[in-house]
Amino acid sequence: HMFMKKCDLHEEEFPSEKVCADVVEAILGLVYIKFGIEESRVVACELGVSFTSHIPYVTSYGGIHVDPTLLSFSQNFLGVETFNNKQLLVEATTHQTCLHKPVPSYQRLEWVGDAVLCLAAREWLFCRDDNHSTSVGELVVLESTLVCNEALACIGFMKGLHRLIDHRDAKLPGRFSAFEFELKDNVRGLWGTDPPKVIPDVVEALIGAVHIDLGFNEGQRAALHVIKPMTSTISRTTFASIDARFLHPKQHLFEMAGTLVSVKAYTEEVFLRLQNVFPHWKCNMGNNSNCTNSKCFGVVRCRDIVIAVARESSNRAAVNVACALAVEVLKANPQIIDRLREVIVAKK
Image (cartoon, rainbow, N blue to C red):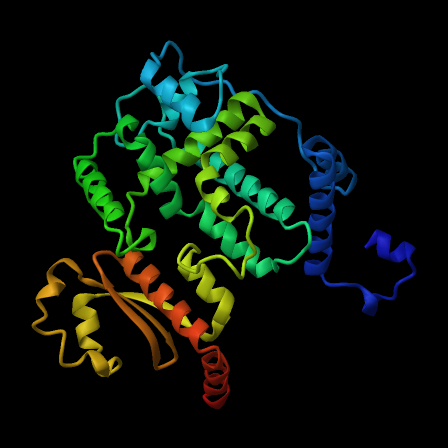
């Protein structure tokens, strides 16, 4: 407001707080892209957004043995030659069920790694689009595709990360086996999987460990090294030419239809009770032998108009597949979106 007063603006001409906040973020983004993290910290302080410089992280534990296999894997997986504090790798791969282990679980490092990964993905997408041909909404879809649990779990699992996670959860081995089977099922694709959340969590924790141990720039490089299998797929193509099956289906759907549609998962029992809402399923569900392993239903609809339904073995997979089906329907029939808008207006 001090700046606006200097510009002799009247009170009624003041932009909203949201606009002011967006402009501050845009300035910081510009400085970061052009001059790097240190200069953006300086400008942030000048704008009144206070950031401290890097504070070394000191572990509360010591003398922890680091398995050479874990060290070698982490170096290859993250693209890092050496670590100052190798014990962070143990923390990054320790599940919260290891109650009596002197090392804390990966959760704090995962929290850091999530932010590191998102920034790395956003910067890569922004710099890749040097001719400004991709909208913000499309960038959001691409970011979601690069950093989502399904993508990180697939990358981590294919590299063998699950074998290095220290846990005491009796259910996890079965979840790993089920996920391996889902990945081999090419018919359903990546979005038809339900990955154990521990795998993408540990991926982010390892990235967080690099950031904490080696600093900002190394953390960004490690994040991009991890998601290179995904970025290499879209590095030389426009958003419009990317195969829709590659994009995160739920985010892609919301970019196409916005608030016109809603997505919800149902158990088989609840879904069967909603036969009046979904009449085209009425005669099929009661004695379909294929339902035994597919007891979750994802439904995309606009009010009481059903656009797509998918039956899968988990809520996540059912929602993703239903959204993917809806995207295909809307791409093949773009006039449907205008019709849905008319429905919304008519029912207000």
